[in-house]
Length: 371
Image (cartoon, rainbow, N blue to C red):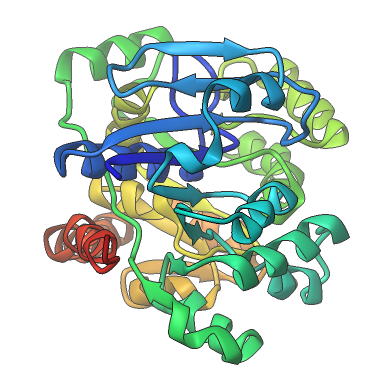
């Protein structure tokens, strides 16, 4: 069957927020459409039967359904040849497919992080998410892993399912610099020639390390009046959001918040930035770090195993050692250091993008199924 259904909790439609998961879903859809598949995307932010869902059609039109049941009355699961699930909450629905007679769709689980690893690291991972991810791993016909780092974790936690998992490293979509737009943004925020611009892109929550930057920002902004700091990402924790709004009020000419930027627009912020900050406490790949490096930013990164590829091309801090401010300020003060690190990081990002085989590996996986 030539129909494929992608399932995601987010997708870049309109002005709605879309993070790394949605970007990978969009790239997967593009590959499948190019392969000639009739590709649909079911978008469900809540993953509960009673809540509304959206269906993105192959022609880019969108239809709203009042709930999952209304969608299934029109599109039974078995109308699709493949179902590719990017989240963990509809295992009961998909498990029913396995018990049905006749032709059944192949189920692919494309995961983006191993929740058991995050849970054991002390992060707030809800038990039903954890349980559903492990059920999804069990029932899937194939499992897509986003990085070699998470593959190592996968075979440690789930050795009995090693024959189902394949590594397809995430792809990085890039946009060219728009010099006119960059200058417009500079004028909008009164960014002068000698100002230093730094950028944080990610959800406003502790697992992304947002609290680290928000705690240190006041004293750093006070000491460096030529510093401009942009926060880009939706808010998920109220106390952090209140702290962020307080910083916006306290430093209206230095601290700026954007809940969401279209990807092409976000890249113009990357291009005008000098320093990209990734304070995340857990990453499986870090799309934004590659984007920042590609656009010539000096990288300030929390020391995570998955970011070891940038070990000689970034400044690293230890989240628990209190050395974030020192590393940040050394980049603010030292233009030569920024230039050296950004040049090295750009080479690494460019090499990765040029050698990335997301499209080829994704096609190979789909073609591995025998009709």
